Amino acid sequence: MSTYKLNHTDSFGDAKKLRSNQENGFSDMSSLAQSEKAVQEFLIQQTPMQATDDHLIEFSEALRTVAKALRGSSEGKALAQAEAAEWKRRYELERCKNLELLLKAPSNGVCADESNSNGMMDHSAKSLRLHVQENGKSGMHSLERICAHEVLQDCEPNSPNGCNNKLKRKASFKLSWGCKGHANDQHKKEIVSFESGNITTPDRSSKQISLTWESSPQTVIIFTKPNSTSVRVLSVEMVRWLRDHKGLNVYVEPRVKAELLSESSSFDFVQTWEDDKEISLLHPKVDLVITLGGDGTVLWAASMFKGPVPPIVPFSMGSLGFMTPFHSEQYRDCLESVLRGPISITLRHRLQCHIIRDKARHDYETEENMLVLNEVTIDRGISSYLTNLECYCDNSFVTCVQGDGLILSTTSGSTAYSLAAGGSMVHPQVPGILFTPICPHSLSFRPLILPDHVTVRVQVPFNSRGSAWVSFDGKGRKQLEAGDALVCSMAPWPVSTACQVESTHDFLRSIHEGLHWNQRKIQSSDGPQ
Ligand SMILES: NC(=O)c1ccc[n+]([C@@H]2O[C@H](COP(=O)([O-])OP(=O)(O)OC[C@H]3O[C@@H](n4cnc5c(N)ncnc54)[C@H](O)[C@@H]3O)[C@@H](O)[C@H]2O)c1
Ligand SMILES: Nc1ncnc2c1ncn2[C@@H]1O[C@H](COP(=O)(O)OP(=O)(O)OP(=O)(O)O)[C@@H](O)[C@H]1O
Image (tube, rainbow, N blue to C red; front, side):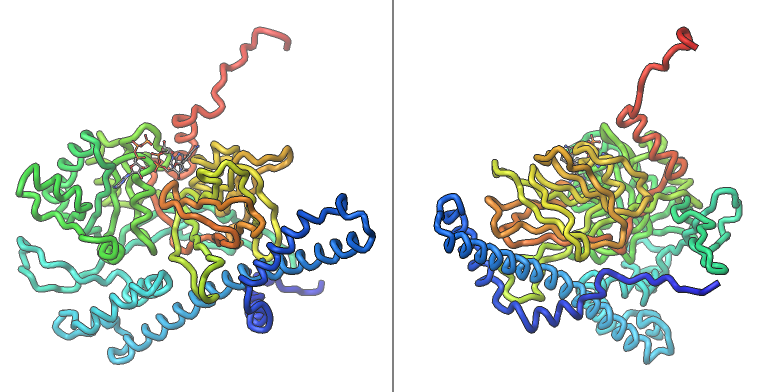
């Protein structure tokens, strides 16, 4: 039998080609775009109906061809910008790797934080570390590898050891993928095997994931739904219990710290942060996140982490709870069992999105990356016109959405807005991107589910009647003008949420209890046999 190899290529394989296109070709895209618009306007006035002369018809055909070519080139620009952003990210990653090597060099492979002989972090090392973290998501990701779980422990006023700024380990844990029929969670096999030239899939890729602590969690952060009396009462009780009975360091939002202090000054042990930048640096210190609220609070908590997210334990204190399986009345038992481990988790994928502006001064300029746990929505906002959105998947044209808009959803978000717009419900652990139109003005537009490795680009064409609006998990609305594009792909930082029982059980329970999915009276046997 002949042998062969299966290659996986990533969607950026053509980036070099695109870059050279960019360099050699379309240098002044905005003027091209204006010319295209002018041609289109001209065509609208000069329809073949009005132009009876044969030459004019021929001329208008030629202009149509030119307009098409111009449009093609402007589409190429947005694509090239997306590719450029990706190359920029890769460059940042490389840079951080080099920094990692630099940090390692003087201390024989030991993390720079550890290398300091008296255990104190020297200022330059600290500022270098912060600098790396501030340099975009790749930098932060890389840093996690550099200093896995190493943190600078804050000075505790009542600490038995006094304030010695000793470096302690963040609690480490292990994730294992269980297989049906294999009690031993160490069981490992290739998902796809090519033995003897035959392709087989001995195991399925999505399995139950369990988290086992390798050292005890020490620090938790609690996010709470605002303006709720029951949440406020519970947070007071929980913070005290976590400190007095579990000896944990507790972080809360600044608003909650103020609430706690208004209850009693004895809550001054509770830690907080001052601005968003500070919270983005908290990840290396926090072992566990607790949310008290509904699904919106889980979305809120996840949005605070622009890189890796500590495991989340979501308590249900809202009306619906697709991502909040824990009952707040039993919080002590739940937290005892989570802190002890092992626990089943659902690894929820996130999408990373960024907007590429047509007006961007140069091609490498893109906006900040946004991470969503549910979905990114592109809609018509306050405009009463149909949206007109050109959609591409990698380099292929998907379709033009004409309707109220488009939802690009994670599988976790499949039970949220996408469901309301007619998308399928998908188990949250299935990797993929849901492509769900909102009220498409078409009889034949069915929602799609795309694989997890693709990059989706949604562009407002230059001939669009109005602009479009983007929102991220229902928040942070931004306007997309003609020529602007949204680029979206799977993020490398999933969100792990603790399960009450296990992932599939919790998912089914949420659609049964939350949506009364497929509830119907059972037909009686009293009838034709
Ligand atoms: N027509 C709609 O169904 C519609 C419209 C706008 C926004 N939304 C959803 O609201 C989300 C924002 O939630 P919020 O709590 O901040 O706003 P919100 O307070 O307006 O609540 C929206 C509702 O969506 C539910 N929800 C959120 N995530 C869910 C999920 N993954 N599965 C099932 N239900 C979910 C919430 O429980 C809540 O009942 C958006 O991400 C979007 O999915 C839905
Ligand atoms: N810590 C927080 N800070 C600011 N806003 C928050 C926070 N937690 C939640 N929110 C916002 O409050 C709103 C309501 O939150 P959430 O969905 O958790 O509660 P709920 O609406 O009572 O739940 P449900 O939708 O299940 O009834 C959401 O828009 C969410 O973004």
